[in-house]
Image: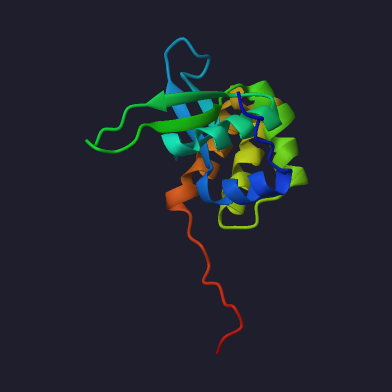
Length: 156
């Protein structure tokens, strides 16, 4: 067996800047106190050729899992995804990692919103209606719903 791939933290951050997704949804279920609860995860999808990179990231962080899905388009490679769902791993591993190694792209505002929601969950504020309302407001402006300001590189 070959030597295990080791990746520097900054490399993982750069890779994540293009690929990571911060997933936040509100799951409806009548057995929950308020009828809804936040579901959170991070995911990094790649085609099967880059499975070794996902394994190296999983080993570096020491949490999460990798799953493989068959492609829904004939001729495409299977998709592998590194995923962290456990709230304790997100709070104790993922957030400290990205706070020490900040994302510097348009992923950064989404990460900061994700972190804000995770801090509400950490303080158990998601168990109150006002906390859920804060989470709804944050989610409403994330990812594809986010409006990014025009960036200027100094060219006139």
